[in-house]
Image 1 (tube, rainbow, N blue to C red):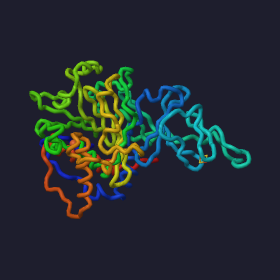
Image 2 (tube, protein in one colour):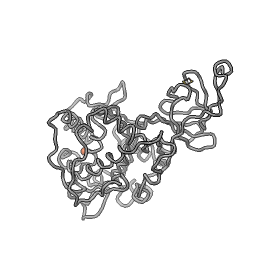
Image 3 (tube, rainbow, N blue to C red):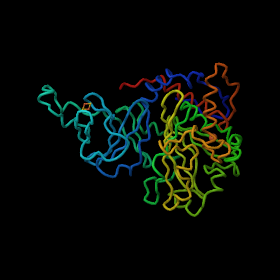
Length: 400
Ligand code: FES
Ligand SMILES: [Fe+2]
């Protein structure tokens, strides 16, 4: 089990520089940590009709989640059993069956191979009944669907969730009162996925890098607590009480909708939930965003974000075209498309991307080193906790 996330521990850097820049290291993560993780695949309402599907890349594994003819959600490896072609792309409705585009092998929505063109001539010995798509495990929490490449993962979905059911956010992303903002927003960020993750749990930087945007909280009023391998953020900046609504969120929120979030505490409910290793949930009084990290290579990470707000509130939201770095042609947000200095954008996420890419460049230097980490769960102790989780996950090899 990971170490406790205690403010009395002296935080230390557990991972070597190589962990952030080496392709070999990433391959090790792919064959251990990422091969046996739970990935956000969509929300329950994405799968309203039989045949509705969404693909997701979990580590090295192309996966697909779909609704079968019995109305059950199923997870599969998105690979044809003939010669392995990727079957479905993006999201949509597969119809009554899944047809491989290469040689038209056809599968039922329960994964069973049903049709093989020219079977008698080309595959006289093939027993279709013995061939199914490889299964992946499915878990549903609070209307979110997760998938694990391992059909029988060593760690059950419930064990992975740990105490989230008691500590989770009250937002119901499947509520008809909510409306999704523009589908997936995709960022391509030139840094290792762990640099992004560590920046998100680094409480020490909020008042400094973000002095013109978030402006805090200071490390002593900013706390991460752990449940399982996940970390949840709150702040004690108001009267010393635990509160997941930071002051800047409260300032911006229109409280007229806040109380409509099921179970929300006045004046709303914000926070950051880092679900190990790749999912970030950021509920706020006016929205909820779910982001997934997808390592492309040791120095590049895709971040896909989906957001929901109350209907009629979308005009309050930034349009995707207005996000600094948005490229019209590819639809991808990249720092190479920035048109103004990142610290002048007034966008804290752009500030974070800027610093993460700078960190990644520093990490290339053999003289890179860390002298000390800020104490406390509102400082840099969460980095130690996260790194310990990575170290432990690297030692586990799945069967599949
Ligand atoms: S690879 Fe799918 S039918 Fe041949
Ligand atoms: Fe930040």
